Image (cartoon, rainbow, N blue to C red; front, top):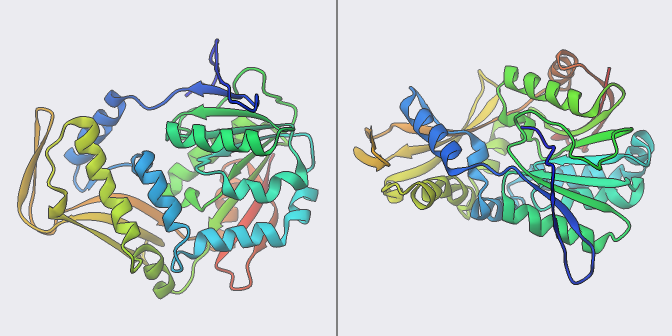
Length: 332
């Protein structure tokens, strides 16, 4: 994915704070192709990036407010407790590129401290991205705000008019854990290419911990995570004209200790069949669609991944329980 449009759109508001918007949103054909391919494999799997349509993004924000879901509040707490030190290490007058920006709440904790010249929010959910970046532009009139709707797991380059002298990528939320190890290394190498030698990456990395804590985080009592997972099936029905009976699936999440990851699945509770376009799929009771993995790392394990990606760990901040880490990496 090349973020270099010739004629970027500009979204104006009553406050006259414009967001320069670049649209590379995923097309229906991209979505259809990946869903058909994923459901044709054994085992069946669909990329977690497709969990984040408008409704999925709203549900994920609700997940981040749940008492069981430690990553969001723990990471935000790390940023608040260490904001001055983080700003000192990052420096000023950079372009800040937030990957998977979502509601952009976490970046607000940091913006006033290191005051970047430009902010670029990148997300796959167009409506959510526009709302969040426009809110930033309104609340921080001194900040030049750009938005790119794209699948940022592909090639990354900056749009025109963005400063390339000092680039800092911001990837919070432990989303790096959604990639398998080799994929994580490949993705971070793309970030390396984006920021350039001497550029930096501030990244959230979830750490290994007690299995009961992990189980609660992905199986909340209110059922919000289940709704978030099941929304993928609703999205397939809505956007691809499928006839999936969502009530015939249930959410399941568990920690796979041998692989060091939480796995999230949609499990068929009966024998069933459904159509997506002209393609028929059949599932037996207990068959599942793997929708997300969330790898948990030790500090040593992630330092190794960073090194294989061309980065060096510059500074690590953790919470008092060592549940989570914010890490500043420099491209070498």
